[in-house]
Image (cartoon, rainbow, N blue to C red; front, side):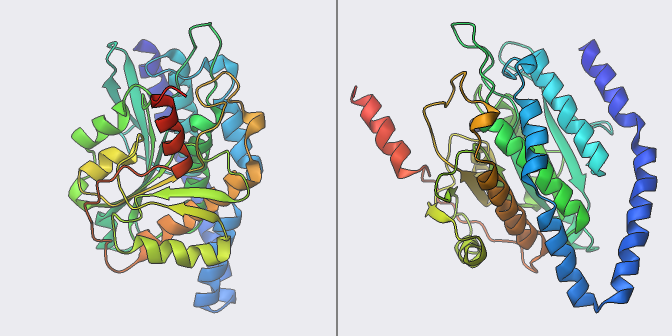
Length: 349
Ligand SMILES: [Zn+2]
């Protein structure tokens, strides 16, 4: 607890230094706008933002989050707090506003073992005077399962350093091209102990859930093979399928799309509160929840492409005139291959 208070003081400190960097960037982008027609400048800004999502940066975040020193980032552990601190300091470095409690990036809550875990929240205010009161959430959990019964550290590179690093990269891209609605970047704690962080946020929302218009969840997006990408929640708003199909004309993923908002991941909590959700996932693999889930097994090109897709989808949702309407499609949405495997296990295969 003392340690975490210390951490909060550190993250509050350097905001002024960042404000001057922001001013410099603002002047640079104004020069750009005056030299080319506004629409072209806008598209160029989006392309620049998209290109800022890079495999090398994803590795910088993800490899650090999956270091043995963090001991598997078990919810409530010191390793999880180190990961939270890293994410908060990156949010601050990028220029996101503290989106947590008391002017910090943190929303603390208590795990079942009575330990403190935290959601880490960064806010990018929208540019439209009215739409800025509506929020898009881009999130993913940063905790993992810690150490297994044999005492081996499970680093959770795919689960979910992949998604957490993508949240950071998507945030960086958004800062280069702020949209009309506000965007909340959320790294959830203690997901592995039963979606505790997202459940806590939804029970104690810092921003009104009635004005939270969509949630994009990134959980295990580092093991794409042959451009495979699973998207759950596509039926939770009528705008999702056309959006996914339009975007995929550029991205050309081998998509498996399911409608339901139910999932064993954080999007479930938002869906249960009546918020349209998209769940991006590249499927289960033999290293799942094993000590072998390491960063050197991540498909970096795939992760970069999925993070860019997530950014494009969230950007569209944050800029469109109407908020996406909600459809309560409660089906559990998971890849067919995973459902088959789970069925096989139940039958004792
Ligand atoms: Zn996960």
